Length: 413
Ligand SMILES: Cc1ncc(COP(=O)(O)O)c(C=O)c1O
Image (cartoon, rainbow, N blue to C red):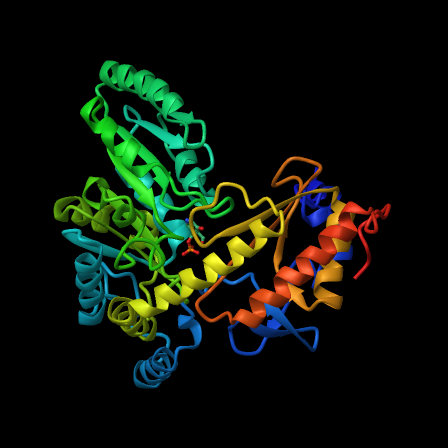
């Protein structure tokens, strides 16, 4: 049998809609400068889909630094993996700055966040070790778990009773096998926007022996007094043994980093396969990151403006009777009821008639009959953007309730 045959029969849960959705709901092209107003199919939309939390993507100093660094060094430099030929003073300077910002002894850069956290998990655990992780952890963490040859226990999302139960089992097993325990959770959960219970988990260190790895992809730059993240927000940054962050969100770039104790970071530097066997981050990106970190640290007003917009959007939605769930971060989900054809018809109406571009989540990512619109407010959004969006959601929700969007099939786009 041709191994490709089954791929053509089943394109996957999202791929099966590709003939109707491609270019519109899937793989849409947003054009123009990154920001709250961009063009989609030639028309201006208010965009709520980009994790450009602080508005750094188009900050004039960021754009100037990126361009100058690309002109100075080109995109190739340095060639090779960090360990072989791809290290520079700039890479090390960035690591030092990040350690200082995160309040950690050391940092190592990761060329991509996804592979980086997978590799970090892979490098830390052996077959005698046990991983205990939150049920709503990101795909990159779940893929890291797949590499683990030993046992893993999942605890119900943010449920400390269940965490305690799983830790008891993990502790017993690890003791019998002569291994240790790695606990993995997130600072801010990217779909629902609720913070991980870092403080509560850290307090279990009095009861069990474990090390804590936190993925704070959405918390970096947005949470805590200085933007150092959710650990800072909850006053437990020092209890996080390994802190993972990406530049793909607040940093408005690409690449990531992991911070912690010097000796452990040094171990990771020499043992993360995705870093040893892959090219290091190009210099223009590293130099661009240095500028971004400087701006994050020196301009707290960017974070203040983000939160001003978060509060306006979230309070406005709540006042209009929308269910935004348990978010306590900038991530703003709107929970509605409806099937996929209705959800897509509503999304189409929002995009075409109200000029609102936001991401929609439906089955199989969430249970059948539910719709989640996920809005990401940024420091760059204006009061007018927020007002127009609140009005658009009120009107389209009324139509949804009146069954105006009840169609048999996903609309053709
Ligand atoms: C929670 C979380 N972890 C890890 C990643 C992967 O990071 P990157 O985009 O830098 O590969 C993402 C997505 O960007 C994420 O949301």
